[in-house]
Structures are given as structure tokens and as C-alpha cells.
Image (cartoon, rainbow, N blue to C red; front, side):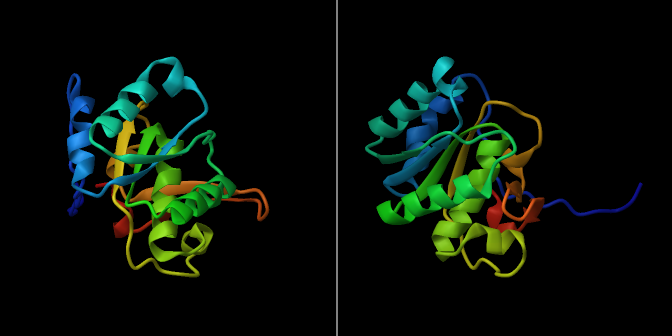
Amino acid sequence: MEKFVAYNPVKLHFGKDVVNGLGKAASAYGKKVLFIYGKGSVKKYGYYDIVKNQLVEAGMEIVEFSGIKPNPLIEDARKAMNLGLENKVDMIVALGGGSVIDTAKMVGLGIANNTDPWLFMTHKEQPLKNLPLLNILTLAATGTEMNAAAVLQNHDSGQKIGYVHPLSFPA
């Protein structure tokens, strides 16, 4: 077996009803949340209400961006970034699977650096900071909830690429 070093600074909350501590955990990062989620299943299965109630009970101001699609698009990340910038959010809460979390990672970099996330993805710019990202995972598949990688696609350029940066680890 090859030698290797693993580094993972992500704090993981795991277990039944652990989401009930979300408000307290989020409070450590600020008061204004960009709440990013997908197209409908989180509402259908009640996760949306649980998460939103936790944030409201903690006194958070919530700005919502919904509709993240599978195989997430840079266009949606840009729209969410602009919404976050306009509302001066302190953190991002992502509710969903890999597509939602990957998008949220790039949105956080975009907001914190006031830079188009695609410039990071194509290595034309380097981020200097990021917003705290809290994930509520609904579908374990890619490991994005615990790593520093994200994948987005750009219809204009015809690319689907990945990006890895140490600032992209979720909080």
C-alpha cells in the first residue's frame, strides 16, 4: 500500500435528529444565511421545514436560493452568488445532495472574493477566503459534504470540470 496523508478539517454531526442542533451550530458563523437547496424533494419530504425552522428559531435572517439541478450549472452559482452579495450574507447553508453542495462551495468562494466562481474553476484566479458552509446532506454519494472538491458545468463553454481548493472544505 502507498503511504499517504489525509487532511479533513470538516466537523461532522452525525446521528438521529442531529439536525436539531443546526441553529446553534450556525449561530457561531453569523446571523445572515444564504439557504441553497434543490428543486423539490427537500420540501416533499419535510427536510426544508425542519432546516428552516432551526434557522428561524436561532434568530437567523434567511435569504433563499432554490432550484439547483443535478449536474449543477455555473449560471445558477452566479445567480446565487449575486443574491448573496446583494444581501451581505455571513454564511451558506446547503440542503441536498452533491449538486447542491458543490454549487454552494463555489458560491461561497464567489461571494467572499467578489469574483466569478468560474474564474476559480478554470484557475484564472485564486481565492483568498471563503464563507462558512454548513451542509445538511440528503443523499450520500460523492463525499462532497466532507471534501474540498466541487464540479460544475458551463453550457456556454461546453465544459464540466472539477475544482479542488483547501478553502472549499465545509465548516
